Amino acid sequence: MTNTIRVLLVDDHDTVRHGLKLLIDGEADMHVVADVNDGKHAVEQVRSLSPTPDVAVLDVSMPGMNGLQATGAILQVAPRVAVVALTRYSDDAYVQALLAAGALGYVLKQSEPGELLRAIRAAAGGKRYLDAALTRRVAGAFMARYARQSESAPVRITDRESEVLRLMAVGHTNKEIAANLDISVKTVEVHKANAMRKLSLRGRIDVVRYAVLQGWLQES
Image (cartoon, rainbow, N blue to C red):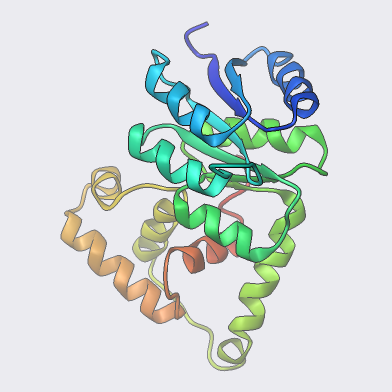
């Protein structure tokens, strides 16, 4: 049982929450350790549970403290908890806001159940996961934004710059990237800045979109 993924489930609809609990508990490698109906209680559970949950699955639209607010609050209390947003909203604005707040996964409620299970496993392993129904549009938005750039000479980044962006996209800090690649934090910052400049990436969300295009965010 030591490898079982401990899941905190947060949804304000009792029927939905009950169904999700049955789904998750039906998997041999994961278990719902608590389920609550709002963000405030989710934060309280994260504070009180020992050990803390590995993954928090949060509904985005909830009364009181919503999923976006709860994501930030949970990560302040326990930065190692991986957050997976579960919602019916497929709007890019929601995706960007949750990823920017620190969520590792974003899954649509209307998708088949396997999407959530894959997202939980990916997030528990420190990887980002976007619902398969979203990746095409996220990639499409990225491609539309940089259409003019692609008409000119293709942009090339070095293998090391690519490694740095890949690790950044799946959630690693500069310090963790440095340790992983056996280089200094300063060197990581230089590679990151050079790659983002070459690719005209303006921030973390752009890096995630680029990672989607490269196929880095699908579960391996």
